[in-house]
Image (cartoon, rainbow, N blue to C red; front, side, top):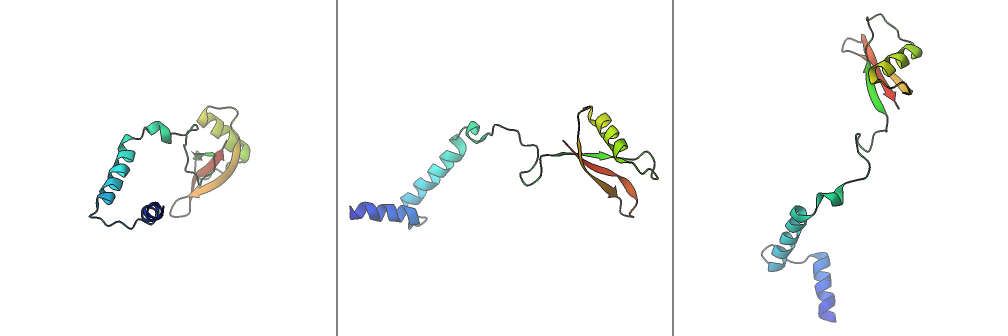
Length: 112
């Protein structure tokens, strides 16, 4: 019983050195897991288009026709719907985009 506990403790705290057969067996098991595991084990049911830390909204960049255009919310929604081809698109947030000189170049629009 004591020898079994000693073996379990040695495996759990990994007291084996690199030149031992136990180390070689563990490396072989790790490599077998990496190369022989079916990829279906790691697939998720929902597609991931955005990183996990970002919201589930899509983003669209709308550029004004001329630099002096100040687009109101209705015009932005109309352009977003025309751009996406979906009449049911909802605008969540609008952020003006500026170039290095500070001139407005468009609007970044979060949509759902």
